[in-house]
Length: 400
Ligand SMILES: Cc1ncc(COP(=O)(O)O)c(C=O)c1O
Image 1 (cartoon, rainbow, N blue to C red):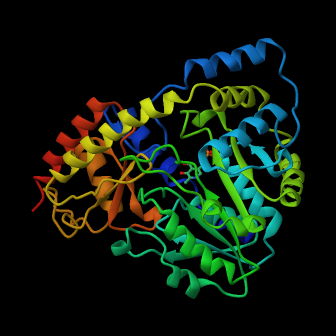
Image 2 (image 1 turned 90 degrees about the vertical axis):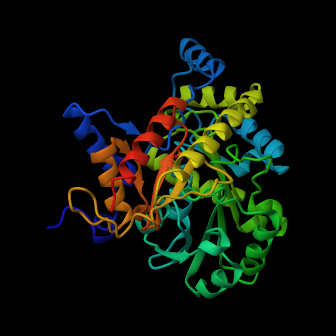
Image 3 (image 1 turned 135 degrees about the vertical axis):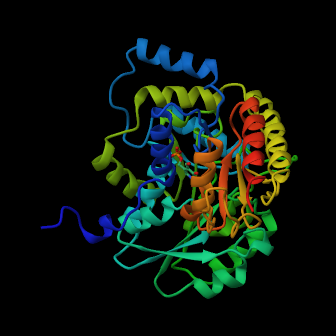
């Protein structure tokens, strides 16, 4: 008897985790590796947030909370949506989860029937596809043209919608490309969705605070308020307040959907961590100046990484409008031969080769729908960006 059902067997592990094993293996052999694969920020969690967590633990806030989150955090989340998006939600429309991943997986779990389709614009954070599959759905990746900034075009969305389509995923800004949809672009996508009453939109705004050059991340509900009954708006504290490991995300959704999601969340996890919820409340209610200060640092790192990568023969990268990832095109090195005689034929081959040769770990683009690219996280110390640029440049110079 198989140990898991076929859908589960078809799921993939995290591409970052798989590549990280190679990094650890190399390090165990004594090699120094600059790891630029993780979806982590290198800033610490703000001290007042850590203090709030300690205070909560010491005050005995160590019991189960409401399944869908404490009232204090729900109110802080409501205030977040008001401040960030100008959107007002009732407490009954908010669910707090163990990370935004859980909120997305739960939304799929309560809405998808076997064979229902979920449209995922690609390149994308491939986890959406696994989450849809896990819920019995079928992910439908729709290619986003490079000459449209890797953003979904309304005509491509319209073509992809079938009678089985139940969700469109909109990640803004996009992991891995850093593309940022404007309000007008989102409104056009929503115009298509509006014609299909069975299609909902799940907006993943996790990187909403990592948006550069003075731009702002808009969420689909801002662009199409009339679709409120069909929208789930997801975010979390991970990538805003450097709280990746605290595991707190949240979603705003119609109250009846929140009720259903809460039932599933209860079965899977009882509630989010009480201590982490206290920390997230402090992050959302505390001074927000930390976001702007850190954004300035991130933008400097982005510009440094872009200029160093573009100085490496055969590699190129455009400055991302958002996120803290650089999508590096390997077009100019693919087909070239390494001094060891290997012909580089994909982003995966380039990242393996850079790891071995330069000691720099970049994620292969294949896992994100970008076979000729590698993804670099630039939220690492500046000296590592400098060193990586030098090492990658030296390695590329040896290709023939
Ligand atoms: C686009 C995107 N959405 C969601 C997540 C999950 O974030 P969380 O830590 O809140 O579960 C990630 C994590 O990398 C991500 O890149």
